[in-house]
Length: 116
Length: 118
Image 1 (cartoon, chains in turn yellow, orange):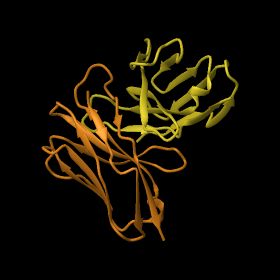
Image 2 (cartoon, helix red, strand yellow; image 1 turned 90 degrees about the vertical axis):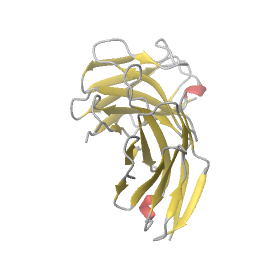
Image 3 (cartoon, one colour; image 1 turned 60 degrees about the vertical axis):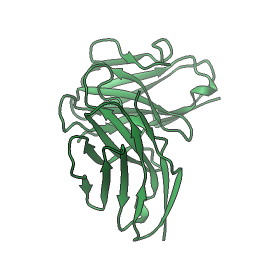
């Protein structure tokens, strides 16, 4: 299994500012992902964080709004840029080992973001 | 596109009793994985159980078992001997076994909130 640490666990931000969320995994993983969970809703994939290259974004999410970095196999950041109240959500990092039938995805405990 | 449906927004069970959470999905793929995740108030998504579509045998993990009906595209979770610590949101999720694109993209249902009464 993998242990995922996410920081900050929660934050309250002003409209128009940006917040960077960090995700650290305790072992090297192939895949890292960022999900959003809006209040009372399920999880939606924002993007796949690719090591050494640009992230792959899902429909409805763009790099200018959610820039992602992944400098190595254990660390990734997600930035929520130019925030508005609609960005108030829980943001979760997940990680897994791809290419195996035993692949399991593990999740961090999320970052609860409130935008005023 | 694949979809996952959980038709029970909330469920309640008496401690020590058994409860079944429903999940159906839609896909044209033949090879995929299905999951149940538990999300307690701590927000951490915890993998409860996993099923490979090519396996006919239903997965079990201690008090948790699934009823996987591939033809009916149904994947229900049974929790036996329910405990207070089982109270949480439960999400059913689907993942394609095909590579390319979002390899690890989990498609989640909307969740079922399970309450356990002492």
